[in-house]
Length: 107
Image (cartoon, rainbow, N blue to C red):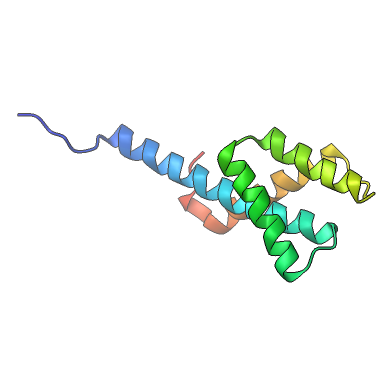
């Protein structure tokens, strides 16, 4: 008899992908809020900046592109922040998210 249910491998893979999506989406929102705040955006301008960064990432999911966009925005605003500082911020945000999710995070 054929079984069309999910195998344990498929279930595990789905869990990993869902967790990765959640962490990335949450990370991007927090990172965009941090960058927008450093740029001096408040309220509706900050929300617009966050939406634009998140939409850009959804269209082309690429960490490099997001880092470059934030660096360019900082350069235009004459804010000195290194690429290394942004990468470290990303890592710190991800670690906080994983810690809050506890055992639910699968790497």
